[in-house]
Amino acid sequence: MKVFGNHVTFDADIVGPWVSAKTGGTWTNGRGTAIGKIQDGKLVAGVLFEDWNGANIIEHIAAEGNWATKGFLHLIFDYPFNQLKVKRITAPIAASNAKSINLVTKMGFTLECTLAQANPDGDVHIFRMFKEDCKYLRGKYEI
Image (cartoon, rainbow, N blue to C red):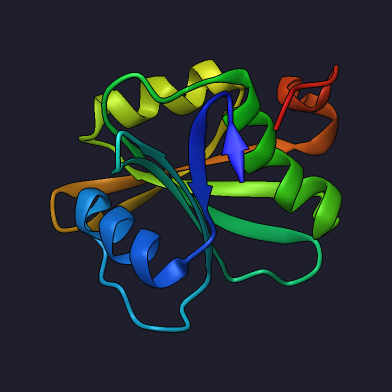
């Protein structure tokens, strides 16, 4: 699959370890599903989805460089909201990770709560997005 001339992979065994390494997590085979963006043969963005319960899914996002096309953003929100039919996406982020907090805030996530001392570096912020608040599902994007 191509997204604006770049390739997309759904191989969780490639994307999962990459996202986990960048977000400070640990990858275990079968942990979840994933979507990755490949540019010039290199993985530059990945989204790991886990703990789907029918209403909610946990999402971890990692990226580098210029990766955030409208088509890729549409894809990573279309999957949980339209294919899995979740009502919300939850994104846990270390309170010390200002870059990721800025990213999810720009995407439209809302801070829901803080888990004190839930990370080796301190607190974890829990961000959420409801389907009706997702701007990437509005309009049509080439995928």
